[in-house]
Length: 444
Image 1 (cartoon, rainbow, N blue to C red):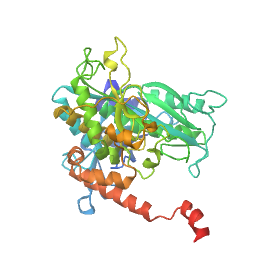
Image 2 (cartoon, rainbow, N blue to C red):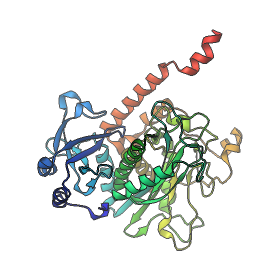
Image 3 (cartoon, rainbow, N blue to C red):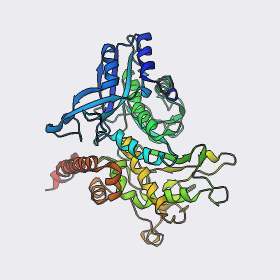
Image 4 (cartoon, rainbow, N blue to C red):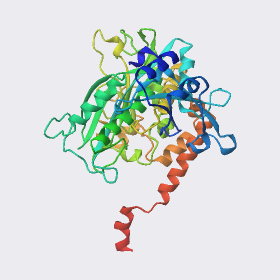
């Protein structure tokens, strides 16, 4: 059933009975966007949808401390879907809002963070639409990054040997009410992309979480491993998550202005300027792992320079060219994020940064249409082009002092997230790598 139908509790109970569903999985994420799940039987479903199901939040990353650990998972019936890979005895899933025992929203729930921001803009009549393009790799297993094909960008057989995997993944996504626009082989060997049709940010966050698990499950059933790790192979392109985004009011695209040379409204220009100004602050959220910064280096199509353009794909933000009669398609494409982020938090900080630019009328600089990778440092300095953080530690220093991110995420998640990233960086910083052993052991 398509998510647009927005099932009610009564619809869910009826369908569970009709389809003889054996288990219903409750899905939610921790602060890092790791999917958490537990299953209940149909006999517990009616009470579970009304009262929610309790669990110990102290064991979930970024959730409660042990002395305040009682949490409740309250399912959203509008997200009910059958899992297409469980056909022998049907199993369904619903996304949950994590709430306190008195059913007040829990500050540590990433889904609540995004819902809170969307509620604020909803009071103005705005809808935030996003369309992420998630890239990923197929490997033979999860131990070594050994690919399963030698294809390149848009290649077909015999180089692209994962066509059937993508096809089966698309069928599974469609069975779960997720619209797919197209799929193709990406630039690196064994790298692929399936693009979802845009939707409102909350629905798309749920779809992104679903997409990642569907890609992995279809691969697993075929004996392979799919990963959204940003940079699994040295010397090859990493995996990004370009995020197309726009603001609407009703059916009107607030980013479009037919009289502007770029066909961009003042709202769109302020939004772009907002993301550019706050890009370094939000990078720890949109690119949250140590490995994320192995992708954000010049020369591999990953945008590291804070700039915008229309045709130039070395810029961090691209504005796709306007096609007459396609006003609703006017959007921006933020190219820095990677697909291993927490989508609820990533979309939230993008929206917060963009809105800040709109509200405070940030001035948008001229677009950079030249290849920034070919510029000298002096040329970039003259054009006021700065870079994104070069590693997780640099990103932590930026987010720590960001009032915008703290306000967007809320103090609880902000503090838990920063604390987690500091621990990750310290573990990485003190780790002795294979590179160091091979380079220094023989000469010291």
